[in-house]
Image (cartoon, rainbow, N blue to C red; front, side, top):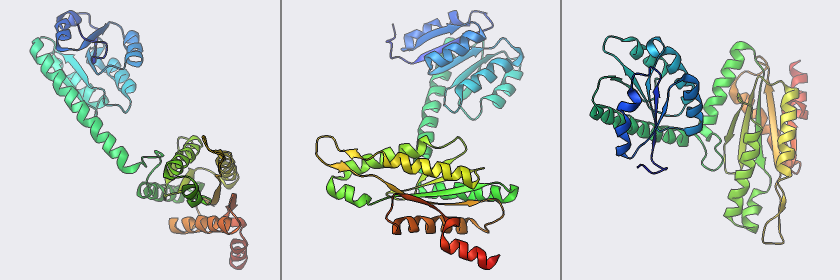
Length: 319
């Protein structure tokens, strides 16, 4: 009998023509087998059990209903799906290609011998493992391993894409640059372990303040950036204020010592209404100027570029 840790194969025997009984010997391959016979039951098991592989004999014509449910439940995971069909029905192959790509899936005839089922199951699971490994490598290539925020090059690419879209469709956009104050002192007073922990918790603050459409990045050792699409200046200012406050309250005594970890940030930001800035380089340069003024003012503050004296003077000259 397979152990509770053995991979689970969910057999969706919706047609009710004996598939689950025919595949019962698969349990001898150190796989747990569970069966569903109705779509609602299948949907529940997909959420509860998180199977390693699904074998489905669909009842709906071409399997369109079941395969769309499977595709939605699978999301962006690499859950492999083996679709049972017959030689005289090409529709499931077409539906599967439309709904299940690019994840791993395969077709098998209902009258195929058990050995072929076992072979295709093994092949699908290997493909799934390979796809998962590739996905993890792609994720690691563009995400910072300490904060899960975008790496600098990936953030810059998204910034350019969003700026072009905002320019083309006359949409609001805000760029926020964050630099931790006196972060070098944390590493001097404590050690790099504490510094790494600070970066992680600040990264969490940034992530927790992101909407689905927002973009966050770690663009330097103690530097972060946030891109706020569709966000006018008033709303951007609220986000900036919240970020500064939530970073500041991270300060406190370090466990096991009588020392405090002082954490604060300087934040500079600039906005774009789709027309008033000529390039993404200018947008970033303005945000950097605002950030620099925060540092010069002692840190633990936020500044909007348009409110700086030099920005107002420039607008007066241009106006």
